[in-house]
Length: 375
Ligand SMILES: C[S@@+](CC[C@H](N)C(=O)[O-])C[C@H]1O[C@@H](n2cnc3c(N)ncnc32)[C@H](O)[C@@H]1O
Image (cartoon, rainbow, N blue to C red; front, side, top):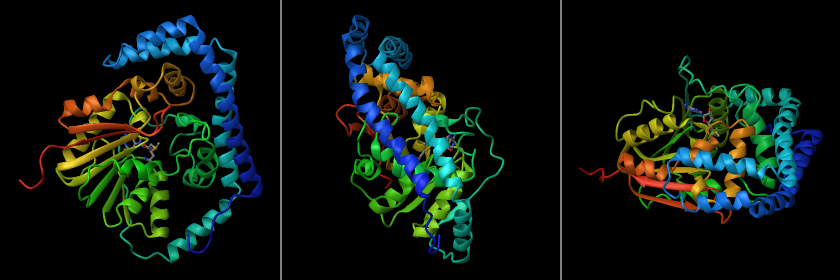
């Protein structure tokens, strides 16, 4: 953005910070009480005993069990009150974030036009394919985001200046524990890729490119390609990449149809993406990633953990996202086990790693396409 820095007004910043802080505090104390209530409830105990025997159960069985547990948890006043804060905060984040960024519209538009005058070619590109068929689920108001991913022209700025620095910092949001620091989650996760040479890295569902900017720090010389369906997200990522000289290629594509050649990618990344897809769509995306990976190339999925890896109360917290927070596929994704699906698809050396003791977030699944690429 040339030399122009966009700053939220003091009022906008204060509003966002207050909310983040409120969520962190409300979640920390009340959530522990809600957990104790659940663990003391005899039905909660019976369901926990069943969960302990369900390691390899099909996803539908996990869905049924966790839904029942959600009903038991809702008997607790502490649980309902804590969820009230979550619900209110979840809505308010967007109401306040949009208002805070809207107050800066003139400054943002000026910065955009200044940037377009000073652009240099650093390898950043934007390839839009207008008219791609939108999947039926796509316009969902994700995490209660008004209008969905393309519902507001300044959503890139809402995430960059309001949501990112002022909400995740306090934790207590969705699957992130109160106070949990997730700032370097992306870089740390990429460290789980097997040692090797990664010249071409592809992120499916890249949004505004948050993970690709982190990948640039870890892989300074790699060719970085990101695809997404949302024009708003891609355009923002493109502008930021130009501004910082990250040289990222942004492409508008359906996740299951990347149009990349077979065997052409060294690593495929998916960060915070699979939980936003219906299960059949995720399986199609996994197949597509397998197709474009070169033999010996690896796929890394970073997302919330499977239900089977966390205690039942934590699964209830995750299920709430599907029940009440504009995340229709969150539960089905957590009820699934992507490591198993990757093995069935032919990936080998499939490994999983969790980064936090209690919520197991971020949860990383990595697998490699057989072969060396030399044949
Ligand atoms: C939570 S965001 C991903 C964030 C990003 N990976 C990061 O690390 O910051 C989910 C993204 O998935 C995109 N998306 C959802 N369904 C898609 C599909 N079928 N094809 C391509 N992109 C899709 C949305 O537009 C959105 O940008």
